[in-house]
Amino acid sequence: QKEVEQNSGPLSVPEGAIASLNCTYSDRGSQSFFWYRQYSGKSPELIMSIYSNGDKEDGRFTAQLNKASQYVSLLIRDSQPSDSATYLCAVEPGSARQLTFGSGTQLTVLP
Amino acid sequence: DTAVSQTPKYLVTQMGNDKSIKCEQNLGHDTMYWYKQDSKKFLKIMFSYNNKELIINETVPNRFSPKSPDKAHLNLHINSLELGDSAVYFCASRRGQGYGYTFGSGTRLTVV
View 1: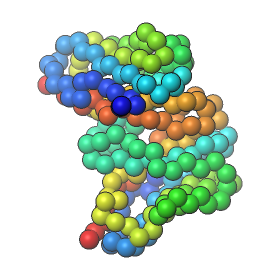
View 2: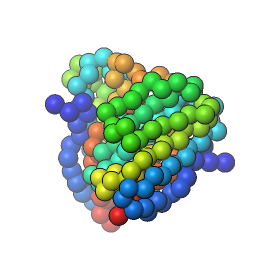
View 3: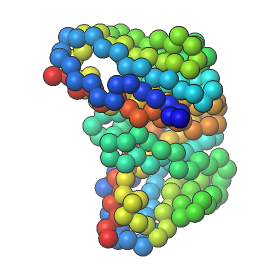
């Protein structure tokens, strides 16, 4: 089993819709969770971090964490073509020495 | 001011050559990392230094050798380059446990 798994994608949504990106992780001791956005040819950019169960909202982005189910998700409301990118889920395992990344979900928002 | 800077951005070289990638951060972070990103966007950790001390050394060929002269710099030297080394290499730093990374702009290495 991979340590961090993301829904494989690619995912296409129409402009204005909600995009839902999902991630599961295997280490129950994980405490910190991050979402990165990576445009083609660019470096990953941190867009959300979440540490406690529940929802965390920042503008059009909402991160959701359920530690019992070992599940973290990212919702993008009112999706825009500029949101088209690869979204990487990153988890800090119990050892806390590094972040472990999922393989990413490629999102395309269609105008 | 660029927070984490990597040079060069592109590197095209022949098999068997030796090359280096340099990374510098001006964020005052104690921990720096090297990751390799393959063509499918998977980011795999290679090395990590905390305040000049090697703390993570994943299973990578010993042709790869990191060096950290001080906590703001982390370089990667690669000997005897092979075709399979072609990838994008990212340097990153972070403040500490519980914080996310700040990534450098990446180095696209192509071995021909």
